[in-house]
Length: 616
Image (cartoon, rainbow, N blue to C red; front, top):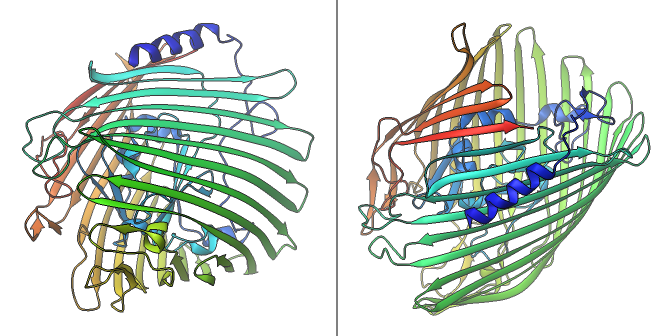
């Protein structure tokens, strides 16, 4: 597989035009745009201030030496990453102690949920970073911005154009390496055309703890982007993203010879943006599908789903004090799966959701802004449900204070509505959506020009949880609620050639009967440090050091729920630019800590990864 990819890269590189791209221009209409500016859905000029948004740039991804998105997301405070083994294995993310299916995942602002998944969660183990230009993390209930399933927050993958033509190689063995290339051409008639392609293979330890065989994965990605300003006010944009991941899945904690998974996903987006002095209009057409197969000793399990989305939004700056926006979104999901092993299950059906949303931001003064966001979703089984968010932001000298109240919801999956299995669990078309209410207080103190302290305290309540009933006969809305509360602190320093962030998170997720939620550590803390070192003898190079402590948590160890050990993981990366080439060194899990996260699934020990990137 890698030989074919290597030949493909060589053809691309040597057939590419050697013309240099134009210099960076801020107007984003001619030449190379300087930055990716991505507006949060259902916001306008003033209401955007009320959004809790963390942006991970392409430079930060490159400097980290990350291979998959888990390498980046595990560094974000408030996100807990659990991967069932090595790279390519199934991965769940818990945001602020909520359920793993309460974090909505998107591409360019459009949800990419897989309707053939039984519980509606996104598998982050399939996502590798080579073709991703930017990652946006939204912590806190975001249903009013993005729609259903964003109870705990959202993660948005941006597949914009990369204007640095390059190819790269990194790894540490013949069975553990990545190849990637990027090429962009600006044509004479104003088209911006971009191709990204990559291939990654990984084979280290067994997925199960103390296993004797090696589990591997292969990932291939392709991303095509095209943009053009049709006239001074109208922009056309289209992106095609495709990925395929083949991985060895172990059957259980005691069965190493499980499944070979073949996970394919394809996305096509096309849109128009129209701008004028005080308005911006966006229209998006989106389609994606999943085609997953799991083979075990001749038995084939098949999972398929498709989604079609049409979304239009308008943003208006009415006066110097008021901005508002509104829009609508139609989403059609179809899905089916057939599990034919010793455990049999199946489902087939479709859902439709029609959303209407709006927002307004009002500046009482230059230092006081009130933002209101609302959305109404009409679902074909749960009916009409509303989500909203209210934020008030006040700036007092060096302090910035924000108060937020928000709601969220998650509609039932196709399996929860229509599914069946050989244990007798059946679907329930009368299910209500899961819902939430969240309150937040955030404070930012600008201690010095380049030193700041951020703190957020939150409390959330999730009710009408969808679970199988005590008799395991069908899914029902549970009467027991979940209470979540936490405190997130971060001290950030940004100097001329270095940056440092130190964070800690106190999080608590409990059912109202006092039962602790599994895989939710109550405490985590860490630090991320980056520095550009100037040495006259060897020239400048960049160092990145990341440390994260994850506290103890409850998890199923194969026989009972037990308390799992805490971990201290340290990663280090070095990067050196020389004659338009970049040489890198990445050391992960420096102290070779052996741990399971989740329980019974081993994680990689210390690895040393070398990299080379060349611009052309």
